[in-house]
Length: 111
Image 1: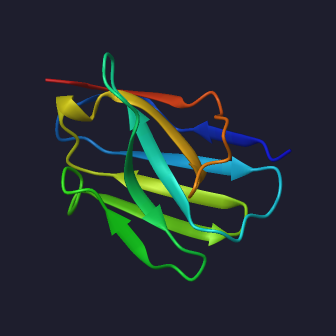
Image 2 (image 1 turned 180 degrees about the vertical axis):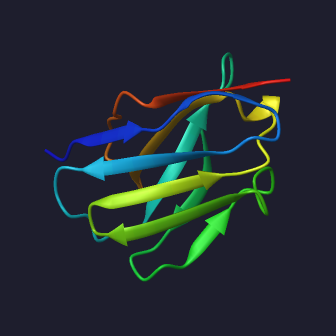
């Protein structure tokens, strides 16, 4: 089965930037997305991208995050102007999801 590995998270001050990476063990040709789960909250989709590069963003990140896909097995999320409310574990997955998740990468934004 396809394995997804997220990386690039960390601790950053409000207003800072991070770039998350997603590496898949196989090429994925369906739409992909970045999801996040904050403590005590449900996992939510924050950005998605089709195989031909069409992107969608949740209102909460629109204008600050940029999703990109350089190949069928590599995807990024450039996060700028980070806010404390962006603190969460970030995951990548297909849309619809595979039914399982990688380990995610923790993003912590301090105020």
